[in-house]
Length: 136
Image (cartoon, rainbow, N blue to C red):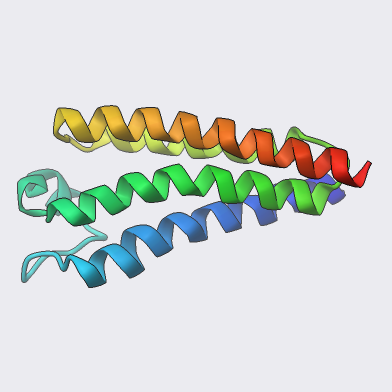
């Protein structure tokens, strides 16, 4: 039961991290054009060229940080198993790749987003393993 809780809490932490970078920081530092609706996928698909570069960069950063935070938090809660961390990291990779496939993006955006989420997973794995070993 503890590992189920660890997975849920880790996923919430990962999602919150992505939200903070994408929405709270990104949309405040680099506001979307007037009339834009960040929650409307069709608007995003049709207006990707109107989204500020800084906002796009913060999306990539969020997708990088999300797995790191989520996997680490899952390991802190679990204390004994890497499985919750792997599940959280895997979900974050799947979500990022779904985003890459579903929304048309520039090549730099697609490549950096895809690469950095994997690097985030590897860093998250390393931090989670250290947390598990520390408590064992």
